[in-house]
Length: 320
Image (cartoon, rainbow, N blue to C red):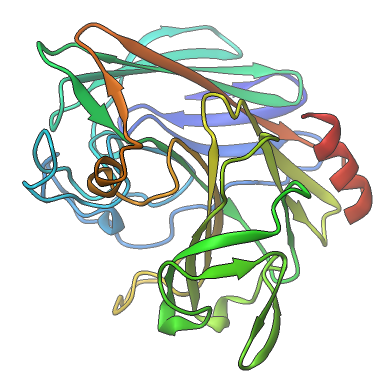
């Protein structure tokens, strides 16, 4: 489904997890979302479906977990990257130009997930709600999963309050072990300093996942250096207190013969962990009583073009 408003355009695929497939500036034609390049494998929605065989592109949703969880998890097992990326979403309402409402019912938990996608000026606004339609309390973890297109030399821009992150995963332990503190943007390693804010080439083979501590400022951005334009995610830290940062420069999935992922994901999230199981262990999973709901909003704001990196940072800060 294609929507445009004269400033930006978006393509949404309800049958593929309700994902946003494309987000473009209509004047410059710049595509901000990573496009699917690998061979997909048909999978029925199940606890055993593997995310790497899905689209793995655009803006997808991870709920009630990012990583897979086994039966020891309160409420039972959860599939890789959750239920909703693998489900067809029902179209509840669609306007001719700029508004779409979707919903889907989870299968690992009795959670009804709704989202409204609205083009507003130069912003794609995603308004979400999740409702517990079951008879007992349920817990969940949520992370937005926007895979953003990159080229070598692009820049990740975070609020100045972010001076370190916690490492969740680093392919070949380039940044250390899970749980290590990594300084941002420059991290000192045994091989020398690494500027984590600067994207690398596809050939670098890097794959890393990191989390911020609790944020006061709810924004993050990706600056497309050669295009002098960027995209900013804006969110309320009272709703989504943390940010996950996924750096993938040809480093995932390991052992794949398909083209490897080349993208950055800036992931507003409820908790700085990868699985619902870990969130439950730490007492930071979101709990919903029967018929209770939780709502949040994320804006994807497209900057003007012709900006320097410094001007783009100023644009990001003006949105907070």
